[in-house]
Length: 245
Image (cartoon, rainbow, N blue to C red):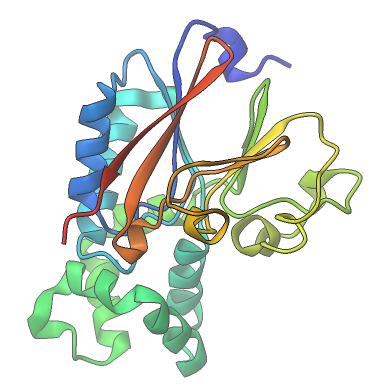
């Protein structure tokens, strides 16, 4: 089996996670990176929606990037996309309220505006299903993980107790924190992940480097910053942009 970065060994690999509806920061970060969809390999590790004001804009822009970059871009699912899908598929009060409590209302507002945001959830859902089926299809088909020659990419983490990390449940890949954060794994590759804001892992929102894992969630959903991790010629570098109030 050939991994994507073996085939394109000279390409720069870029990893970004937890955009959280901050489309302006995301596009600013790509500009700062001088991102080229025809040359770079871009991995996006989930949580594109919720909390920030531009969830619709983020998904719409990701669809544009998907057309431009083709196989040079990979999209993973985050727990916020999982919560949205669960609410849409179940519509029970508990399923919807969990999403609403975690930024779902901001995501819905970006799709239906202030006039409809107070409508019953089933009416809002109907509008989104009717008007934005391509957005829902995109979210429904996000990957849970990706593996390259040197890295394992997930939104939240892997289960270090499993002999085969791929056998974990879908919930593990999008929700896990403990014991992944506290335990070294034995995959032989570096795990790159988002989900846990790095401000909770060390003193600031910069990328968190450990011997076997790298956390890249800069807390964009909490008005901190959006990070990019770059891997080129077997070396890491980082670029960040602050979230403007």
